[in-house]
Length: 249
Length: 289
Image 1 (spheres, chains in turn blue, red):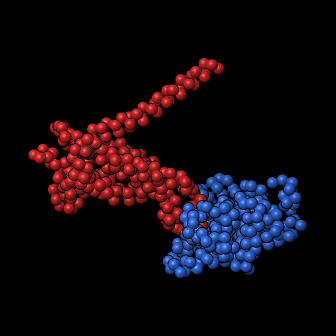
Image 2 (image 1 turned 180 degrees about the vertical axis):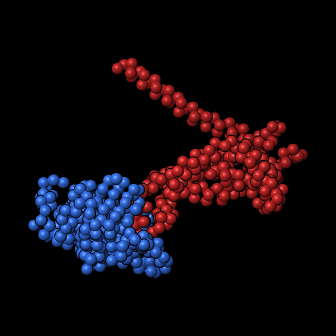
Image 3 (image 1 turned 90 degrees about the horizontal axis):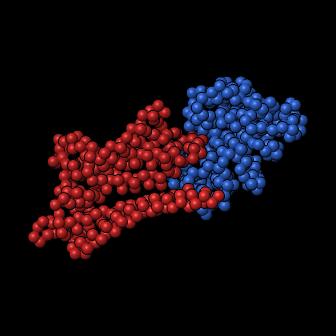
């Protein structure tokens, strides 16, 4: 079943045509990776899925993006959309507050006040993000004191705390060391049973390791989309082959 | 080469001299104040001076108790904070996060203009507008703790707005985006993610505002009533430390004059405490930040 369906989507930043005629279906409970050289539009597409592009002045989108069949640029509560479609950013961005308050921020935003319920959410979110054991004794400490890898997993836990259906990851491991990256990749494989994961990555090995499907972008166009193994072993398009064999990009 | 070196040395000397000038000014003020004030405090007795409620320097025997003025200054400053801080912080939030650019071009210079208005003009404004309003609508004679608080509250606005706005703008945009991405509204993201992150900067603005309010003289004299009493209601008149000095300095002699300078010492100690707490806030935020 497809979680997200994108049809004939075009995106403009002012006069700049950043995404050209994208068609893409992303299946539920799978990991879909967007790859391509810098500036190819993959992050832009990701940010269109939870409407973070709304913050960019002059950004205009045409075409059709649906989440479970519902047009997310139609008559929809944008805050509910962002609750359903969580996001983890390239640079870990924990709030300058305690670990506990970071996780509880989302649930509190959506009206949960009971301490017992919040305690439960904090614990289960940190467990889901596989960081509970490391942090359970420092819940009251500032999140800014954590290492980069811990901060990023905290941000994943924070996103999970609002019980999203989809998790968008925008080069979430690009600033991390290989061990932290490995932990997050493992986490993604575990999380895909409950969530649909869509990730942008510069690291083709990462896409190969964990993604079920991969889409290759070049200069605002989606060149090729398919099963990850097929894309990497037997690409249909010449540009895809050139990119994954490292001849450019 | 040689000439360049000499030039450099000479310029260093010039910079050193200019730096010394301002420090020397502070040191000289300290020496003057304490040299003239401390003996009076010793003669009156520190407890009688700071804790005495009776200020009657022309009586026989004279009494020099400035408790009423200390309380007056504290009350008036507290009132200014209660009125000025919420308005100032919310204005800063609006300017930094919600204001359309076209409106910003008008509002920002307007708040800065507020800082340039001479304090005597604020005093006139209070005297002509706020004092009669209080007399007619709230009660009392008009010149009062309330009138002084309102005018001082307005006077500290530019300080609080300016400092708070830069503190809010200094918060990384990623906090805002992180909050939005969790499904929070714009307003919630500003008040729950950005504002807490800028609280030490905002606090610094508030402390600066306190410093301005407690030191203000001209505007306060015109509208505070200046009675030596501990006010029992906000429509009662008060006399602040600064007002006490200005009102009586002209005709005072001997111990009376010295007692007024000692009043200045007390004021100076207040300002010192405010500056120190300001430094503490700064170093704490640098550590966290």
